[in-house]
Image 1 (cartoon, rainbow, N blue to C red):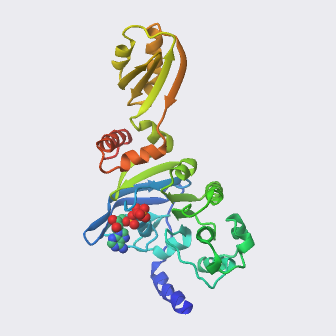
Image 2: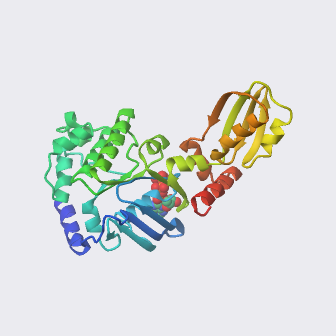
Image 3: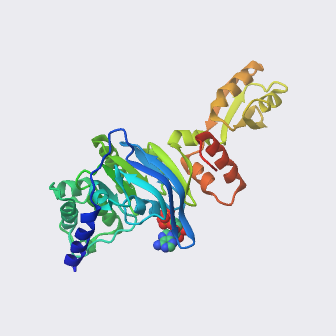
Length: 345
Ligand SMILES: Nc1ncnc2c1ncn2[C@@H]1O[C@H](COP(=O)(O)OP(=O)(O)OP(=O)(O)O)[C@@H](O)[C@H]1O
C-alpha cells in the first residue's frame, strides 16, 4: 500500500517542479486577491497577505475564519477559486511540488503511521526531501529522543504533535508553516516549540504560525494578522495592535482633587471617560500615547500626583474585540484598528 502512495506523487511532482526566482528582498509569502469557495461557503474572501523573509508571522482567527484553507492553498494542496499565491518565489498553483520540498509543514490534522517508530517517521520525511541528517538530532530537539524506537501507535497526542514538528524541521526548510503547533502540547512542549521557532529564525528561516493561543503568539511572533470570515481584519506588530485598541486607562491618585479637574480632563483630546473615586481619577483614553498629556494637565491644574497605574489590553482582549461578530463594541474597535492600520473594517 505504501508503494502505491509513493509512486503517485512522483508523477505529479514531475510537472510541479520549478526554479524559484526569489531574491533576498522578495517576500517569503505573497497572497493577492485570494478567494476560495466550498460551494456556497466563502472560506477565504479576497485576501491580501505579505510575509517577509526572516519574520515570524502569527496567523490568528476564530474557528472557521479560513486559516487552514489559506494554509492548504499556500502549500498547493487546495486550488484557490481565484487570486494568486507565491511561496518562496514559486507559484502555488503550478509548483506545489517545489513548495513542498522547500517548506516544512506541520499540518493542523496529521495521521501517524502506526507501525513506524518515531525515527522511521523522520527518516521517511528525510527521504521525501532527499536530505541526509541525523534523525536522532531532530528527535532530540523536539524532546522525543527517549522514544525514538517506539512505534507511533504508542505515542500520546502531544508526542504525535512533537513528531510532526520533527518531520517539518527536516532539511532545514526556508519556510516553516505551522498550523496550531502547540495544540495538545503540555507547557513544556509549548516552550519547546517557542524555542525551536526562535532557533529556526536565527538560522534564517521564515515562520508562518497559525494559532489560537494568544500567549504563544505574543511571545514568538514579530507580526500578527487576524482573519475573520476569510478576510484580514487587522494586521501589525503585537505591540502596535495592542496600543491601537481603544481601551486604555490611566489611574492617577492625587493628594487633593482640585475643583473642576475631572471636567478639564474630560475635555482633553482622546479622553472618553473620567471616573473619580476619592482621590483617584481613572481616565479612559482612545489613544495610548495621550497618557502623558493627562498627567501634565493634572499637574498643571495644581494636583500632586502620588501614584500612577496604567492598563493596556492584552492580545487576548484584542483578539476577542476584533473577532466578536455580534458585539457593537467589536465593530467600533475593528473600525478604529482598521483606520489605524490602514485596513478595512
Ligand atoms: N472541505 C470543506 N468543505 C466545505 N466547507 C469547508 C471545508 N473546509 C472548510 N470549510 C468551511 O470553510 C470555512 C473556513 O474553514 P477553515 O477550516 O479554513 O477555518 P479555520 O480558520 O482553519 O478554522 P479552525 O480554527 O476551526 O481550524 C468554514 O466555514 C468551514 O466550515
